[in-house]
Length: 274
Ligand SMILES: C[S@@+](CC[C@H](N)C(=O)[O-])C[C@H]1O[C@@H](n2cnc3c(N)ncnc32)[C@H](O)[C@@H]1O
Image 1 (cartoon, rainbow, N blue to C red):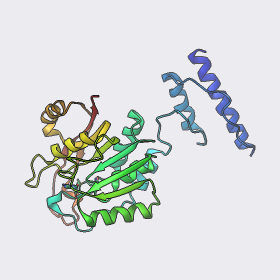
Image 2: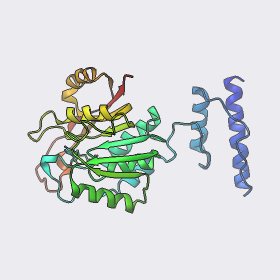
Image 3: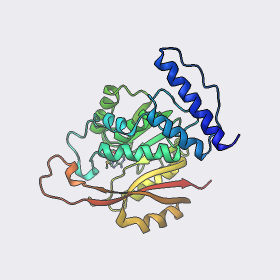
Image 4: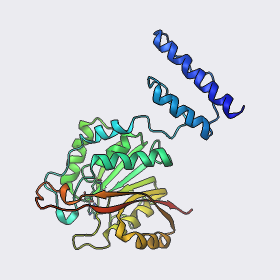
């Protein structure tokens, strides 16, 4: 069947289901199983955006909740009560987190049904977001017990179940570990190394690569781009910058009163060369 016929069948099927729904009649199983190529996918997206939203693709990478909804959920994640500056404790804002995770799912299909690790999980922002996007299971690794307590509280409050938080030092506790290559996807917003801990983001990245069997998504200061590229080759990974953002770190600290400026941050995807 050609693309045009594919698209027409898909729309007819969708239309039929809509009519059933409007009449209050049960919606049958999809009668037509489309072969998804780019054009069919585009038609589906278009149809979905104008439909009443009951139609969920079974083979699609597309997240089953909308980006705006994910951002709204993540606004409910509580932040650090007493952020420890030396651990670079600030929460990734819900706007950035939702876009970060949505891109990972929609563009790379690397969350839904995947085993996900979050290194330096803080109060759970990225872990909880991944769990909402239907990771098969998420483990957040964090050194600080106060942050872990808030993360567990957040997960309970938000009734997210496919998640665990473990206390550990990402820099030392994975050297000989049963977690080597155990995760499909590893995500991290690591400490950037701005508090007399230069190079800590690279150490986090090294651990992330040890734990992942497929891909790693991480944030790094844009000023370190060339260095990160060089390191990723050393670590036997293919690294690419998939987005750029501006991030006001100081405003993330409640007590910070001074005016501060944004820093430029790269969103990286590293794929493990097998
Ligand atoms: C920039 S925050 C990110 C927090 C959280 N992932 C988020 O996105 O909101 C970095 C986190 O790394 C944690 N951290 C710092 N050093 C660590 C270490 N050696 N092992 C584990 N976690 C660490 C901090 O406590 C902090 O929660």
